Length: 258
Length: 258
Image (cartoon, rainbow over all chains, first blue to last red; front, side, top):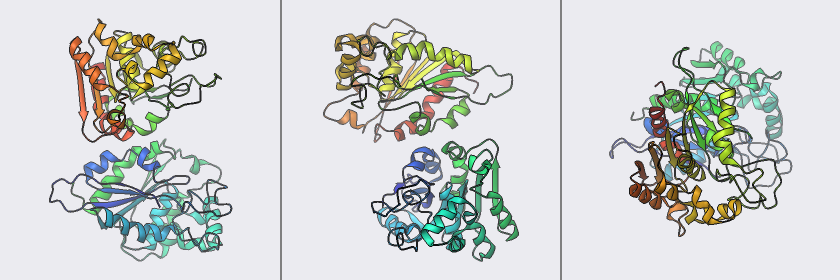
């Protein structure tokens, strides 16, 4: 598995190792897209926070149908461990992101993986939210850009859960809107930005279901800072515009040496 | 011809139209690369300066050999008007950048094309420098990232001038290091950043020839701010790191409403 890492220069030689922000990307991406297009380096350098960009699916394996569509298989792992026969051997993105990758990163780099935040864009936003709810306390800070917020209620999620888990019903255990209702772990702060002109929200079929998630959070009394951003779409220009806010949010929550 | 434009929000409704910075890209690029990867929006918005990203060659034409290599033909127009039979009809990037594009931009957008700056990366840096020297006073502010500074003395330039102009000798009229020696126009400020770990400089065959240009400027008493940046390569991470300096440099020189 290929991943990218940004390590900030420490404020002082004796500074403790920086906290880590995992940045999960959306459908079709590799570890390169957010790194190249989110314009996050300057802000991460100033906030003294390390960033890790993972890939979005298993790679280098041959599974029938894996490369047939942009929203399933390669580049579309949905940050879960697959259970269907075709995918269960290699598509274990949840274990990769929450166990294997932090191990590798902490062995290779001087970073404090115990102080970890998570963010993501679109499918990566689904990953950030759902991994937080499934691993209470693992992430001390959570944010998302235009997340797929209720995947059992949208075509992308229905396709993914059917293919990776065998049913949409099984997807409920990986769906932020379902998970927040019964979540009992620490209420770490969540920041979500959503473009109001995002074509995936304004389209006839809403793939993101932001409203379902905000309603579920309100009902569960989970503190969510949800910001609808007028005029913005689903693209990296939208991410780029608000990424400084997210980096500063995570740096504050993780106690980075600002 | 496809191009991209960024228009800043004016400080006040009554603010005069913003000045324009032309951002010329390098080999293999379209109008998209620098827009997506240079992380320039935030800085241009703050400095109230418009940016125009042109494409790097003629497109949509069929010329034998045009698509055979990354450093000649498509994506490699070298910002000159070709004179060879195969290329003279469509490859007229100098006329496009200095005449046609400003006309189109000023007709479509509320910008002040009379207050124009120019910058570029690699082949685009060659474009920025050479177009300034060939059109004295057209640009009130000039900068470059890792420019091809003496193209008659490097393989990229030799190939381009031979193919587009019929000889390397003819390329001297488009070579910044040659041009500065006889330039007699207004000495508008030039800022150049160069990564010291740039593989095109450190390679056995130096394609950029920064030293030739700095020496020629010193000899011609042309004021050049040349900054060798330790550790940086030829990539957009290098551009991204110093792009705020360049935007502020142009905004100051062009009298943007900061």
